[in-house]
Image 1 (cartoon, helix red, strand yellow):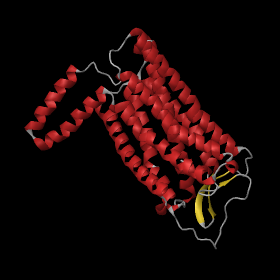
Image 2: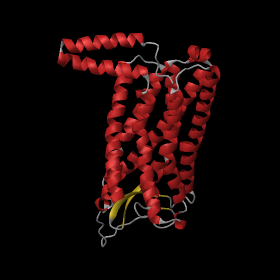
Image 3: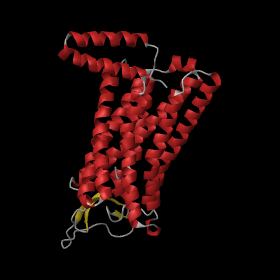
Image 4: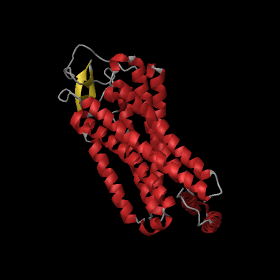
Length: 345
């Protein structure tokens, strides 16, 4: 994803009205990341996000995709996990670029990496919106939902979400280029042929990737909370806490990034150092949402937790013999007794 190096006029060049980067044989750039506290801190955070997100979403794909019955809910979970998994898989490119302060992967990967990561940013966000709408419909119209919510229809919705995400990620194919600036090879945005290209891309991503999805999520969960409280459909406060956590996480993770990008549109009026720091921090806060999603959307679900315990214990059973089999049978009985529990919040 372009993120902080997308718009930074120094850290990674953005060409709008001036000449694009060109070869400079005199100046030799030396990376300074390991000398900066913020850069080292974000490097550690990025590696942690990559490891947790990569492994966590892989686990979700394995459990929801291969160990659980295929339902509408598991269709959402698997699709969301795939989106976040691919996102996390490409984080090493961002981390390497940040550390080296130089793009070493070539022109094709410059365009491809940025496009794929924006594809997964939008698809992940759209899937969160789809899950919110699905839960709202299930609470407001339970009978209709029971008769019309099918795996095939859910798959069509997922396909449309990914198709829209592909369209919105296409600007990276058009604008990303590789050049040399101040002695370093960079992957940058070339808006020289499009007078308002920079502003159009930034604002459209803000609206489609944050404002509209956030409004839809807020409306959906507000309706759900009011409905549950009015009908007293639950005796536990856990659903309300989970819903609050979902909305808060979405807002906290994505707001700093989008605000920083919008501020950078008028970078002449702001302190350059603060803009760079804000874009870097916003990048990894947005990335953190990719490993928080499996925790908030799946691991809190009773069905998934039961299936996870059974699946892990079945692996241990082969190594531990009869004791493992006894434990697994006990958990199986517990799972059947709790069969009414659902991951559907």
